[in-house]
Length: 238
Image (tube, rainbow, N blue to C red):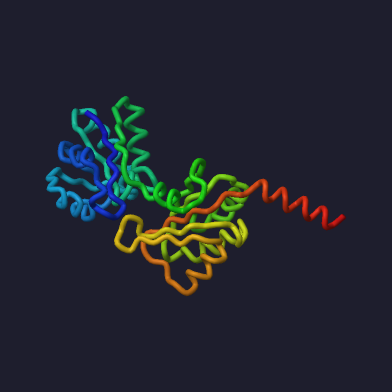
């Protein structure tokens, strides 16, 4: 009895690992965020395992029942629509409940959009913080204010419909000259990454409508540069 967390491709179906395919074939049940999308993946790899729905709207109601099924000897695999379950997707609640009940949980390595986005950005990727989707309304400004002094590279997920507004808010908080990388449709046919300053990115998306899944990577605050600027201001004042 075990719960497997199985990452699935973020776009290109060929990014599925051999091990992930085997686990999905051998599981008693696959829990899917959207069974219609997951069925496409399973058909591509001729996987016949039974699918059941598990998403943010039913996870609280179904988690305890799923834990009981695993305790009774079932092997269950959890997938999301794309990427690794638990990363801006359902999964945490089920994993927490399983670990509390002493049930073995195994997460397979695999696809997630944030890693290729930061590596491809050209920004420092030795230390970074992942913020996922920022609050849309309540708490958004407070969160941005907290990040204003963040020195690590920051990674955000965003809807294409809110990308321009998000970049404009970043420029207000971090400054228009802060470096940014905006990736869309990673691993897909129309994959594209725009690199530059926040001001340059804003100008671009005012004339080019953002489309697809968006990952925004923002440079962290440069303490040395800030200190140098302050010294120069003091010298000029004197």
